[in-house]
Image (cartoon, rainbow, N blue to C red):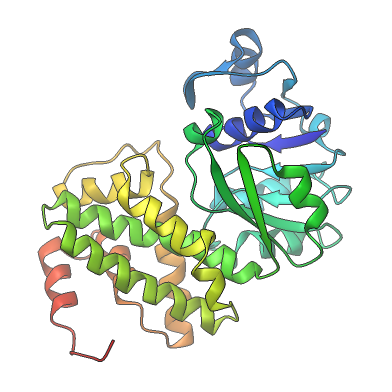
Length: 318
């Protein structure tokens, strides 16, 4: 049995993918009304419309009912992860705990695996990350992701791989965490230039210079360059900066157009930008694109001023 805590779009999509490969899957939702709806309709109509739950997916309101299996996936927003582990002691170390979120915790300035390890030190902690949209996974379209864990991840990799979901494993947890977190910030920047009508050349420049920031910060924290060049870094950056399916990209487009964005939609890159600016400042690392995204999201700078500051920085060697 594979347990999944979190019945949003990504958690539901993973449940569908694992079930189609023959696994028993237990999916937990914190909202009892959603649990009843999913049981009655066999769908998660709001988060993942048009996708039916296979018969071997059961939906649960009690967290204890999904624990104790071969793995427990934590499919919840980054900023909610620590609080959920504090509030749900039933999530214990009997099984590997796999984070399915991307970001940097605002309270601790640490990634998902570190948040899990701090609260469940006896568990094998891992992160599943990389270029993917929930709807593609749920439809059974070919997808490749990174599974990062400090220990031997071969058994977990085998468990979570399916005929349409191919996992590559690494022990570079820092690189995998930061690649997935930082690309969301750069996606906001890319969306902003597209929303403002500044063109694809500007988007390409921001993606490239943003990637340099990703490598700079991650390397300073011990990540390997090849991890950032892989699925969890460069691969995810390309997808998120070029598709309107990305919430971070859409949020950036709204910023660029000067429009409001639906506050009910989770945009991980906003909190990540705040956390990363604090982290980078403390380490003395220059991250101008990230700093501008943070300032724009907080309403501290106008878009034209942000563009001017970036374009008029001192000239340098690439």
